[in-house]
Amino acid sequence: MGISKRDPIIIVGGGAFGLSTALHLTRSGFTDISVFERDDHIPPRYSAANDLNKIVRAEYEDPFYTDLTIKAIAAWKTPLFAPHFHQTGFLHCVSGEAPQKAIDTLNRFRASADGNEQIKPHVVPLKDQNDIRQACWQLNGPLPGWTGYLNRFDGYAHSGNALAGVHRAAQAAGVRFYLGMHGAVDEIVYVSTLQGKKSSGIRTKDGKFHPSSLVIVAAGGAVGRLVPEIGKKVVAKSWSVAHVHLTDEETSALRGIPVTYARDLGFLFEPDPRTNLLKICPMGGGYVNTDPETGVSHAPATLEESAFVPEHDEAQMRKLLAHTLPALAGRPLVKKSLCWFADTDDSDFIIDYVPETSSSVVILSGDSGHGFKMFPIFGSWVFGLIQAGRQSEARWRWKYSNSDKEKENWGGDVSWRIGESKELSEIRPGVSAKL
Ligand SMILES: Cc1cc2nc3c(=O)[nH]c(=O)nc-3n(C[C@H](O)[C@H](O)[C@H](O)COP(=O)(O)OP(=O)(O)OC[C@H]3O[C@@H](n4cnc5c(N)ncnc54)[C@H](O)[C@@H]3O)c2cc1C
Image 1 (cartoon, rainbow, N blue to C red):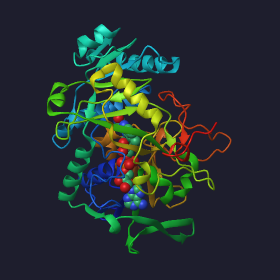
Image 2 (tube, rainbow, N blue to C red):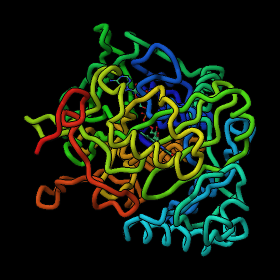
Image 3 (cartoon, rainbow, N blue to C red):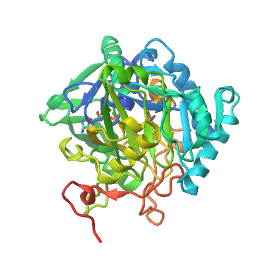
Image 4 (cartoon, rainbow, N blue to C red):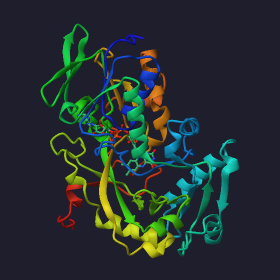
């Protein structure tokens, strides 16, 4: 290991990957850790994980991630994480109108669940609407053509509360947090070396230089601004999120429902008992924000630019409600936003040193919209990387550019996504569709 446990380490980003890393490094004996977060509180509003809930489902098409999620679920059941984990089950279906791609994906997920000894006993096949109603009586909509399975091994986590819990635990363990203007990182500072360059620390927006031996960048959809070397290998992408505000009685009646997911429509969660909000996400190829000069997509700088959902997504969310909980289908959708994440073309994370930085900068990126479930254990992989001094897991290595293979349509080729990505500039309210 090239870095000692007393060396100063800076983590940029107080979202899911950054906080998990701070927790694991401090638990592993590192004594000088500082987290820099541009929002003035945690959970940060810019974090994709600043949310009521995220799906925690173990079955993946790639058994590598299935095994990791089984470990993550065991960790979700430990004292720090357990208050935020709800093993309500995952009702995973397609509607009668689903395209073949969605049906094929569902079947691969089902095969993954059925093929795993630990998960299989929890899987209930649901061949039609009647089976679904038997499994969850609250879903009193027509469920036209719905078929799939319920996996009781899975559930969801209250992600915003989980971030807050780990923030408190890391702070209590001695991790320093710089927030707001003192935490917004403007640049990684480099010095020249015989081999090229090496980071000496970071500079924050308030002009201060903070020295460190290692900078770990966990900046979510904003990674490209701090590590431009990643280029188009990571694409800032967003999906829509909206909520229905329920009454106390409605929330109470829906307590314990599984995460309900139609691959061709989207998914909804058990309502949050504190806010009475029921969260819905439509399934789609998502939205990118490409800089026309560089061709690189970045998350927009302000939250206001993402405070809406496109009409098409709103219609899809209403359709999901009409199929499942029709009494809510005409209700106002509130707290609408586009939520930004860092996408890779193979959905693999990137957990590696940035090349040619003399092992002074680590990038934690490419969450690809499925990283939160790993929150309790993610940081242990960063500790493993630092300890080994290199990334031994090929999936998580730095992605070298290969412009011949660079894809025009991010998302369309990923097996578990339906639909193609669009530019934010095309879907902003007030922009009429191109013919
Ligand atoms: C709509 C949606 C649904 C999702 N659903 C699921 C799900 O069901 N299950 C699941 O497992 N995962 C899900 N995810 C993915 C999950 O949210 C992410 O994998 C996870 O949040 C990634 O963590 P991160 O730390 O990389 O990024 P984030 O959590 O986004 O955190 C990045 C942080 O970096 C900070 N930052 C950025 N730039 C700077 C800077 N210059 N200076 C200081 N701070 C900076 C930001 O303010 C932010 O707080 C979903 C994502 C989206 C968008």
